[in-house]
Length: 473
Image (cartoon, rainbow, N blue to C red; front, side):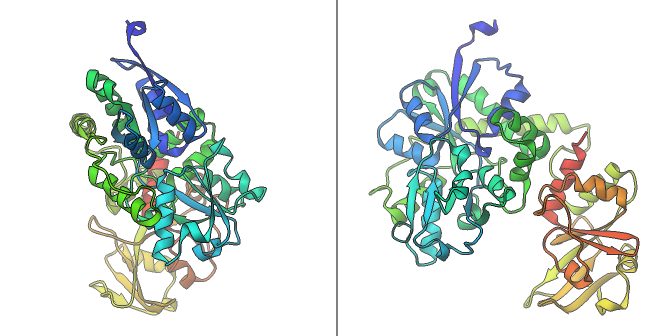
């Protein structure tokens, strides 16, 4: 009977880093076979970690360095999964344009033992600066959801946190992204799933079922970001619009597809912490803290289940893997053939693409060029806006363009604009009036030529747009 199952108490913060929890609960309909999951929301790291070590929680999401510190203090814990990878943002007041602009300023960080503290110190160190000496650091929050308000009331000049607090500050025009964490350390770890070691040893089947559900939730977020944002918004209390923007915008995409806790990642973070800020004096053996076996088994099951469920469908519900697949999805959504080509920016020192005809930009209309490209004629514009050249090429499965150029009509534009949550100006595309400025854009851009409408979308943004369109009602 359901009421006879043991209760598993889990603590979390209402941040994007912990999105796999509400997704797992929603997708499982809370019908776990080996336990009943009871979740509790916390608004800062101090209280969730205290309840974990006081045995008021069985499981919790913690900052990786905080979990490492508790382990150093001899608390009996195990890290069995990552909550996510990457996705942290350094947000500053709008007038600050560089790390040097933070000299003498106040920076608010979530906790002393945090990835944010370690990575920000590394970023300062890379520019021959010292985070501790050059800035004033404030650690910890009473309510982490109020971080953006501190920029308004001048209590802080910057903060580095999880999303969606950064996106909220940007959308309110009270802050801007100065740096994102993956620019400092690509594919880094941050939040981890920590369990009581006795529970993991005595009831491994409970931990395995939990980890299985969280790994599946990560795959779901990757495939269905819009639905994930809607589910997370209801639980975390943020708006769906803010959640989706934070989940998909091009500056700070957070990763949920690789949640295996690899020992070398923790050792790397420990080394940086010791070398840059003396967070600890000596390294310790973390192999007794990190247990990747549950995650390995969960991913093995995920692969098997994905193969079984997709065997007769011919395709899987994930991000499009190539340009032809993406365009095919777009055509299915729109119910008509799409006119689309790839744009590649050729920097100085790079080779020209083969079989491309060099022409002057002013020779033909964009409409005419697209028609000819779809008939196997590629074009090359040399010496355009500081580039060696710019290529417009026909798409194929091997295409690896920087951006996708689409020709659409008004009806299609209205449908697409509903889901351009990665744009910067209230989800509206500004018209670029000069063709050369339009073609070299590496952001979302719109151009009109008589009654024709053209869009440029970075390839990564285009893939997420397709997912959002596919999964819309």
